Length: 197
Image (cartoon, rainbow, N blue to C red; front, side, top):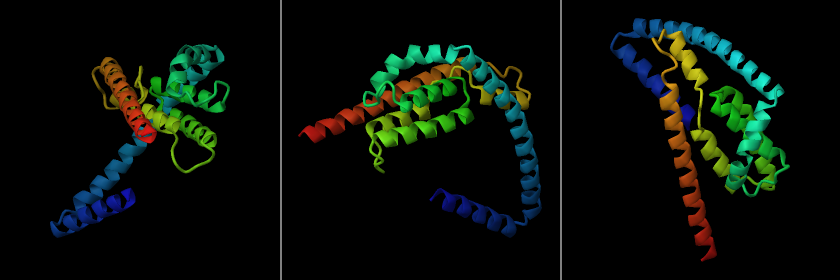
């Protein structure tokens, strides 16, 4: 469906440009945007490589394991169906740590692995389990301590103070995560109450 929307928007834009004689501007915008996209991606790669290196050092130093142990009791309450020694718990905690440091691109493979493990716990069913829904809600809202990708974009475009968004980002993502957990729990208990009746 999303692909159809994008194709529709592209066709409408091109037809509008042809009717109004703006194809030269469209061509210029396409090539300028492509150039900016490549430059931005290269800039982001350098920042992500740096932070992934920091994450690797933290992992080797045992810092990530300590953080995971610190958050494990809280995460266990969010995912009571997941056994402590199951690989899903490790992937969930790793995904949360990567998101906390603003490494969304690095967190994605961990999130996919966590979902695969949660699906295996669900018996391979195509219907999402309670843990899968909770994980998706938390992963989408994810508390971010250091928004590295956004800082990199702000640096690329010569922001006067690229790190000034750290505080507001932390507050906004904390509120969004709390909201996601509350909404997830509300709908879970509502469904459970309905099933009991």
